[in-house]
Length: 528
Image (tube, rainbow, N blue to C red; front, top):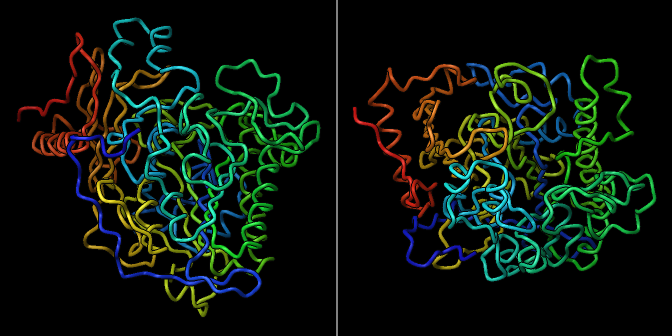
């Protein structure tokens, strides 16, 4: 993937010099360093409501608990949120690979063109021909970026390495297909790769099953690089956590600041029960699959807590920034009606056009809260803060690069915004409360061929193939968080304005579109 895309229109590169933030940290052994440690803790398929931390807010902007917050048990997420700031309106793309590449590049999926998950063996468009009628499948864009990231691409770890970082990848990668260089994180700027490859899901979470060695699923394949745990009762989430702690110890011995990209396979299907937590969810009125999913969530929470404890034990918690988030909307196997279940009160789930498909948890905090600590004086993230502004997965790229005084190469467009001002509890008059989610593909069992555009309180949705559906939908997300009332017919001026904004964003990024009779099916601004 070439992130500049030659002659395609490019948005202006976002400035990264906000505040001149330059942090200092101390590594083990007393050696001085002028950089903080960074942990990006990414959870697969974890939606906004898959935690006991209330992420949604009431009319006064205060955290509001919902029934799903009482179902899950995540004390370490609560611990992290109490020390830092969370976002109520944080977005990722609706499936995994687009988000993961956006985190690496700072770009919206419409620009880097990996707009669907990457099948490890073949172009999804070929698979769509088998799963859908040809009239539908052949409308997927042939120019979409199935190859994902390439060795030459600008990525978060490549830029951090240039300013002295040890860069560590642990867990799920899913950046490119097999037989492509980008399938191996070592080709994308990481010094270390533990268990990352082209696969998007584990064949098994159980060490006794060698993490899927005998799996016959096309997508859920054996997790590589963990042979020493084969035949043991070590759950996959625990094995990855142990490996991450070991790699952190090596980075400290080398006296280098580190980036740990802690990318768990959980809580993606298969929904295998983590026996360590199973008893907590029995006899509580939910299905076996829902119970298994809850154990996966609690296993993630334990991993987070173990890493936080490891930072404290090594005396580096104060100068380690932890960023916790999900890669797309939730996929919890919960029964519900009217498509409001796994993300209630939001509608929809992973892969969908609804808010439940794209809203994810986001928490940022220093590993140990200490108002007198010199690191936190440089970036004073308030304890227990919650922000209402829109944040997006590709904002991590410019925010982290600014934090460590790294630069963006000329010619690499960045769509993300620097979140520093918001993280320290201050409003940012330059911040744009916007998010574009472009999905020009069919999807099994879900909505397909759509683009959504949020700006401020409003969200517009355009469906490219509208047979039997409304082509346009308009929602006020503050007044109608479940997207139950389509206001398009009542607000033609607002609809036209939103559609103009959406089309402008798509054009500026050189987006690809579904096809109609072999021609791009571009969105149409309605007449008022």
